[in-house]
Image (cartoon, rainbow, N blue to C red):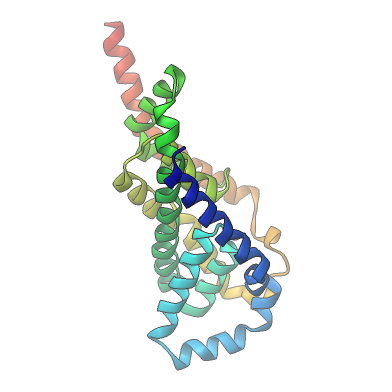
Length: 228
């Protein structure tokens, strides 16, 4: 990794550490948000234009610094702005924050890794590039991997920025809409674990499998052509 990559990584690590030490995550904890929900509603009512802008800026910061409060922030978005506008704001902000992480990872790590990669990396990278949109869509829809990890992995395999942004924008819509809807019951939620159910996971899994169908079809067609 070059000098520029190290500088970018050090700056990002320092920002993440400072954010954690500053107590930002505690300010956006479930208990803290629930305790101030009436004040926050009043604030949104008093500033109908500035409030959504401030929310988007805060959400971008949360995702960019990989703070573990995105679910609470999504619930809050649904509570403050309603499920539709809340979903739109979170999807835009989440995509923007994810793109920041992706670009940082591509600049800091991706170039160095690709320059020293071997045959195995090239095979994986080729498959990733050919089916990047479908793979990313699956990873975004199905809640199997941490959000920040899915922001970084595509950068290591030279996925195009446009593909990353589009797959993120589309892929986070289902989960965001579900949590934004649940945000209407913010005052009655006792634990984030109560929001997750096996039925919900299976629904997301099925949707993710559907997203992989085009990639599966191309692979089948390629094998069939090679066999013929």
